[in-house]
Length: 243
Image 1 (tube, rainbow, N blue to C red):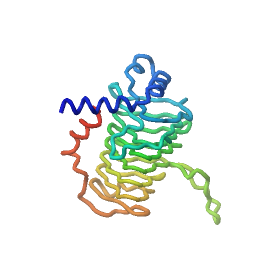
Image 2: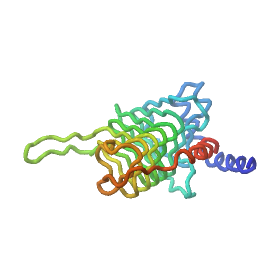
Image 3: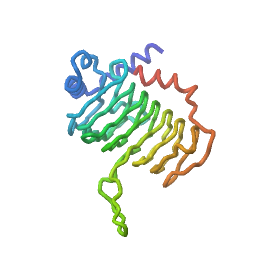
Image 4: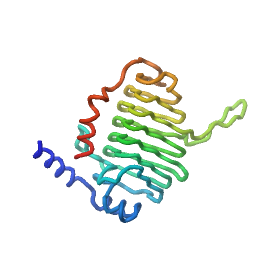
């Protein structure tokens, strides 16, 4: 067990992009925080813009926020990761992004990430107003969370203009499968499961906790169902916080 942990730490050590990691931390944090390297980048990443604000509302630990972390089954990266941060990101604990991510937070927008929330490989976050991830809100590969329509839409009869962007709130302990699209106005309850290839675009909290939703667009599918967080949580924490 000890040898395996040492081996895993060695593997992750050599996959870290030390240049981008050191540059980002000392660019965004005071020295006493930056020296602990709370944010770590693995592999290639383009900093399109990192002029925005980073807030960590948790005890500072090395590598607690990881971008491009190879914690999944896939081992190969395309090297297309990119960050555009001119707004604000608030991290409320440990957070993981998988390989080949795209994170966009525009000016005056705020992205809030709960403790142990994650977005797996090829994930995309586009935040132009507000996106909130609860604690243990964990998204599978190729998911996208987008709080904007990008262009203004109008009712061609009444000429009513529809909002371009609206907030998104993902509840605590959400188990979101692969290739799920979450759009503006989406609200999910705690202990919600979302099936693969679904599209979410409304308030699902009316269905209560421990529910399964899915489809295009997503609808209520089943009640009294949840990922087995109670038995899995300790092993999940141990793996993701110690590698």
